[in-house]
Structures are given as structure tokens and as C-alpha cells.
Image (tube, rainbow over all chains, first blue to last red; front, top):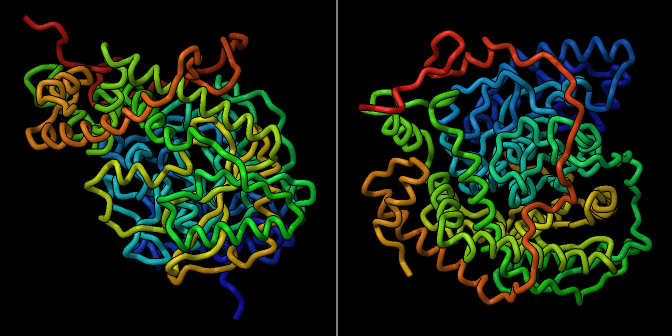
Length: 487
Length: 96
């Protein structure tokens, strides 16, 4: 039997669309039908925009008929609900923004619209991107398509689950400490966090401004290269977006790794890494070697065990400042029946924010407050320098570093919700990369306990091309990206 | 050292976050546990190490001041919980 249209990748769909063998409308209807069929069990979306998608598909078809196609034209996408979409509510997974309708598009949306995006919906997420399981969404958790009793990872929970379950052809997520790569790994799909500054953050609701990046979640590596090519590049509306040339990422996709120097940092293979995941990672590194890469097992990044503490000071500190804007005055939830302005503001924040968001606001405020600033925040910024320098040194003699994405495969829903520190530990292998602002990709590399495992490939600043090349060569030499979740 | 109840209350006041009794106690325990983990950083010698607030070598990013249309007032005000004309309405800040 022929595969249903919703199962296509971007590049497969683009080829069929360009040849006019299928229409965007047919493809979009197939995806919308798939959403209808699977969404009650998955809960990957907060808002489904079926009418908008159908209208955009018709426009895309006109464009395709005129032969003005881009590979993304008419291909259905799902967008993490932290990215502002003009006229479509953007909740951040929070009661605070339950009814917020942005008056403008994020730059990434503007760029995707320009090439003829079809948007099927806004995806579920941990509230304000704070979480590693999707369970902090105010709208209820997303389930993992490989095992509905398990978490899909977070915070881009819906974006990863939706791609794995073929509820969209690709999605956008955001990654502050692993929020694209970890759910991509746990759901068996590809997730790319670009270099800090590579993609504009304009219109990305701010969590931790020195760490946040938007990136693609896709079914294979070629698709990730295609989406990155559209969303990357300097944006005058984001002063931290870097004026650095964007190469043609698909040109980097060659199936061999001759001359590539791969480093495997020891600290990422130590205690805490689950057995089956470890086995999958070791086998994957062997494949890279067979493909011609030179592998160095002696790399050491001794500050790795300190990254978690460093991150959980910096990120909540930035968050406590960023989230001060939710005061019930300009937009969002507003408590109005208090006795005074102050009471209204306190109750607005009390009822509008969930527990994890409050926890981080409190933590960040503590780290920034008088008397503790030097011991916590300033100390963390100095440790950040140490971490950055260690990566710089490692990249003197290596082109990429390879590590696991997550210490374990998907855990059970409810398993870690009452123990914040345990939950924070799910990000130990992804956090250091955000601290140093480096690009990294998660690519499926096998299974443990029947659940997907992800391989993390980390690159030099602005060298997404090389991590895409390594990921592509690995993917083409292995069958993992062709495996389908049972849903 | 565990945080005291008063410290947690003080933090909540600094960020204008209303907390009920249960949340206060939960945060007191959880924040103490996480802050305890942060002590690990004291093991690292960071003497003479400059702080990194930001990984990009960018300073004072400027661009030309080119006039362009602003967002339509109606669309911006559409999200206001309470408005009066083109103003956001709030309760009196200064009370008697």
C-alpha cells in the first residue's frame, strides 16, 4: 500500500508538489485528518488552525501552479506556542496568556510565510518553556507517540510529538537548555538548536534571553537543513541576531565523513547514563568511524558537572526579569477584584502562573537579590566563561563533539513532577551547549527499552553546516529515521 | 542551609507573587534543596575569571532611525484587560 501523504518528509513532499503530482490542499487535508485521528490520545496541540491551513494551502497551490515554489511552499508545519503568530492566539502553555492574540508575527513566522508556509496549529509546551517533560503545560500534558504512558520530553513537547506522530511535516521549537533536542531525542525525530544569534528571537516570548534559540524539529536531517536555511539570518529587529552569512545548508549534506575529527567527551558517558542509551551511543560513534571520521575518545570537559548549577542560576535569573512584564495591565490574565493595585498584581501572578514558573521566578530573584548576587549570579557568569573556554579548546582539534542527548529514554508521566531537581537533571547533557551558545543537533540513533535514543552532535559557533553533514552521513548509514511510532 | 519562611515571603514580595500557605512551604523546601546543589560552584576557582553575560562579541548594536508605521493602536489595545480610550486602565497607584 502506498504511504499516506502525511507520512512524507519536506523534501519528498516538495518534489511531488513541484511536479504537481499532489496538491498542497491534498497534503494539508491528509495532515489535518491525521491530527483529528490521533490528537485525542496525543494532545500535541493547544490550538489547531484548520481553516487557516486550508486557505494557506490554496494560496500555496496557486503559487506552485505558477512554478514559483520553494521547497517549503505548501508544506504543513506546526509552531510551538511560544512563537508569536499574528491573529492566532499564542499562550506559551500558560493561563497567563490563554487569550493573548499577538498583533504581529515573529520574524521566523514572517520568513516562513514568505515562502508559503501552511500552519496547521500551535503546539503544546511546558509553561513559558520551563520544563523537560511537557507536564508543566497549563493545558495538560502531551503524550509520547512511542508509549502514551510516557512523556515526550520538553519543553517543545507538542512540536516533537506532532512530528513523530505525523501530525505535521515539520515543526518549530525553542531551546533554552535542551528544549528542542531532548524532546526530539525522546520522540525519535531530528531537532536542531542553532548557534545563539543565528536565528532571530524577535517574536519569541522571552524566557532566558542569553540562551533562547528557535530551531526546527523534522523527520530527517535534510529537512532540518531546509528549514534552517529559511529561518536563519540577521534581523534588524533582534540586536542579538548575528550579521553572519547563511550558507546553503543542503550543499553540506554529503554521505561520508573523511577528514572529520570527532571528539567524544568522557564526562558525558559517565554515571547517570542509562545502559541501553550508552550502548546506542557507542555503536553510533563506531558508525561515524566507519564513515571515515577520526574519533578521539580522550576528550575531557571537566566543568561538565558544574553546568547544571550554572544554568539553573542564569536561566531563572533572566526569567525573573523577563516575566516581570506579566502584571495584568497590558495583556494577559488580569485579576481585578482586589482591594488595591498591589493586591491585583500579586493575585494576577499567583493565579496566572503555574508552579514551575513561580519556582523559577523565586529562584532567579534569590540569585539576583542583594547579598546573594556575588555568590550566585556573578559566580555563575564566571563559571560560564570557564565552560565556554573549555569548549573553545576542544574545538581547536575537533570539528564536532558527540554525546548523548538525554541520560535516559522517555520516562513515565508523573515520575518526576514532584522532584524539581530530578527533573532538572534530565537536561545535564544539553544545558552546557546553551551556556556556550553552540549549535547542536539531535538525531535518532537507536532504541533502549523499545524507546528512541538521540545522538547529540555539537559544532563550532555558526558551523551548523558541519553538524548537519555529520548527522546526515550517520542518518543515511543507519535505519533509525525510517522507524515509525506505533501511533 | 534551609530558607526561612520569612525569606521566602520576602522574595515573593520582591517579585509581587502571591503565594498561599501550601506554596510557601513547598517552595521553602524545594528552593532550599536546589540552592544546596548550587554550592557545588564554590569548588571552582574563578579568581580573575571575567564574567560572561552573553556569548556573542556584540556591543552597542545601532541602526539608522528610519521612520516606519507602528503597530495599529486598535490591535495592540485589543489585548488590554481594561482600557480607557488609548490608555491602559489601572487601579490607583497612590492611595490615601
